[in-house]
Image 1 (spheres, rainbow, N blue to C red):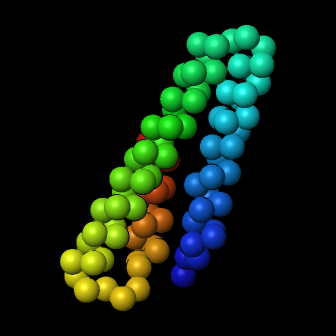
Image 2 (cartoon, one colour; image 1 turned 180 degrees about the vertical axis):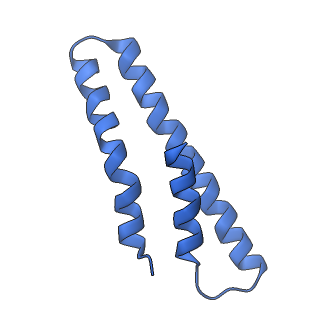
Length: 82
């Protein structure tokens, strides 16, 4: 059974390196590369937010009282691995 904290960590940790790389590039004056990395992270988190909305809406429509974290985890891994 997936936990919400474990799911958040699995999503956030790989992207911390992109965020760190963007900050380093920005501090070195590599503004285009920093913007590129920042855009990647923004895109991924926008997709994650979209999927969360879909899963929550589906759960509400089906009258679920418990959120299916495994389904959410599978969606997130699909987004971040592609």
